[in-house]
Image (cartoon, rainbow, N blue to C red):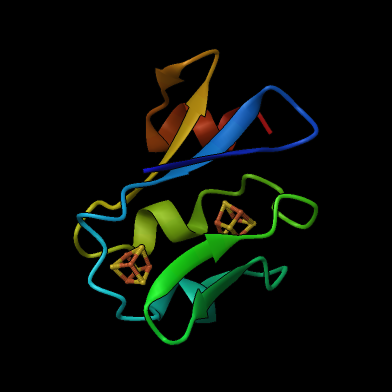
Length: 82
Ligand code: SF4
Ligand code: SF4
């Protein structure tokens, strides 16, 4: 699992054991913040990520979460508290 910080107090958390490297989140990110290294290991560019949670909604296996102050946020409040 990787913890990747943003300038704010929220962070996108990737659960690598769950990720099946489908690449869908990479294509859906509006700011091109996600990439699959060697087509396998998902990474997020914390300089680019705006915590929009589009990738969280998209992921078919629930491998992505947005956390704030160490607590997992729901899709609803992660979108509302940009
Ligand atoms: S939360 Fe939004 S900006 Fe950040 S990686 Fe996911 S889709 Fe991209
Ligand atoms: S959508 Fe989910 S399973 Fe697919 S690459 Fe992204 S994190 Fe991995």
